[in-house]
Structures are given as C-alpha cells and as structure tokens.
Image 1 (cartoon, one colour):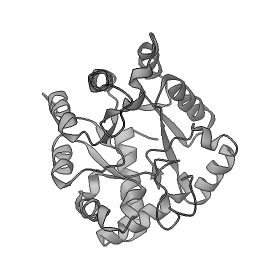
Image 2 (tube, rainbow, N blue to C red; image 1 turned 60 degrees about the vertical axis):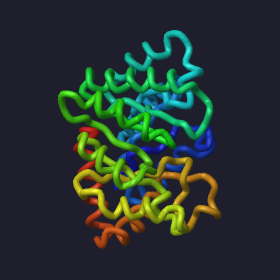
Image 3 (cartoon, helix red, strand yellow; image 1 turned 90 degrees about the vertical axis):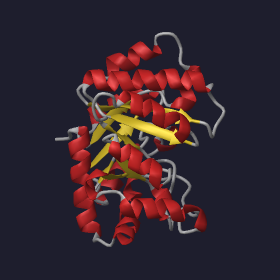
Image 4 (cartoon, helix red, strand yellow; image 1 turned 90 degrees about the horizontal axis):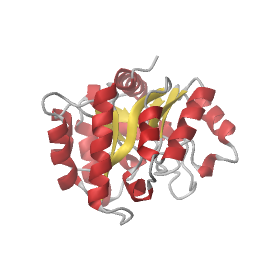
Length: 259
C-alpha cells in the first residue's frame, strides 16, 4: 500500500514518529507522501523525506493558512519545489467550511500552486471543502489546453464532481470517511465504488479521519491504519484487498513518479 497523504510532520507525531513509521512498514505501507500546509510544514516534510527512504514530500500552503502567509513564504515554496525528494505541489485548494482565510486570498494561492505545478511538471495535491462551485472553474481554466496532473485528496464531493475531476485528468483519493457506514456517507461510498480503478488512490490524511472501527477509540490516525480503508474500499468495489493494494500503489507510483 501507498499512503498518498499523511501529515507526518504534525505535532501529534512528535513524541513517537519513528514508532509510527515502524508500525506503518509492518502494516505493509511501502511509501508515504507527506504534504506541507505552511512553509515551516513544507520544510519539515522535505526533511522527513530526506531522512526516510519511504517518505516523499509535497510542498505548499494549505488554503486555511493562506491568510497567515508572510512576505517571502511563497518564494520558499517555489524553492522547495525543486527539492529532489519533493514529488508534488500542495496541499492547496479552496475551503469554505472554515472561515480562516478570505476566499480571494485562497484563490490567489490556489492559482499560484496550479501554475507552479505545471511549470515544474509536478502533480498538484488538491483540498476542497464545501467549495466545489468555486474550485471547478479554476481547475477547468488550468486544464486549458491540456489535462491536469494531480489528485483530489480525501474526496468528499458527489458523483458529478468526481466525473468532472476525472475528465480533467485528475486522480481521486479516499480516506477514512469512506469506511463510515452511517447515512451521511452513503453517497461518498457510492462514488468510491465507481471511480475507475486506474485513477483511484488511498490515504489516511493522518492524524485526521481515523477509519472505522477505530474512529471513536483512537483519536490520532496514523499510516498503519491505511489497511482499514483499503479493506472497506475493496468490499465496496467487489475486489480483494490484495488486488486493490496493488492497483492503488501502481497508480500512486505513476502519478508521483515514485521509484
């Protein structure tokens, strides 16, 4: 398995990060993409990727942190994007759920990330929460004249949004929410069952989105729990976990150009 989105630099992992990585390896996670959410976080992600052969970094300023970006921060992201262990630009995107940054500021930074990713030939890691109507026009403009390279991480949209993203060339990634079995997540699970196998990714979004059945027992999610999301997704799609692990890992290696 490949965990395509885990915030290993988060303070929640500070006490036992090496143990977390050891457990992930033991659980069968062969690689992890660690996305930055600020300049400091992006630097930390790159440092973790330097220190661990199975960790790769993405660098960016997540939309909820764009209003806090200081002068010179964006130039640091541009420099970090050239780091040999950086495999993507992001986490970037738009978020209307939290009121942490004005939407015009978020749009500005999202556009910068999209252009940087295209300039560097890197995929882009996209966050979208309650902002589909704002996000999709920006993606369509960025996709002119050719397909986009990137992923909608921890996908939470509907079938129509998933199809639009696929049509633009993007991958779709599912996290722990796809394991939740209450009515609120039925439509998400239906989308996860239908995404084409060659465009499907899995992630933990650690330390967030702990999957069922650990959701109410273990507050902090970690990469070793990816197997639970894989199992639930395999059941939804009517395939074996082994086949799904192989397929999603191959997809991740292709998108992020992993060795």
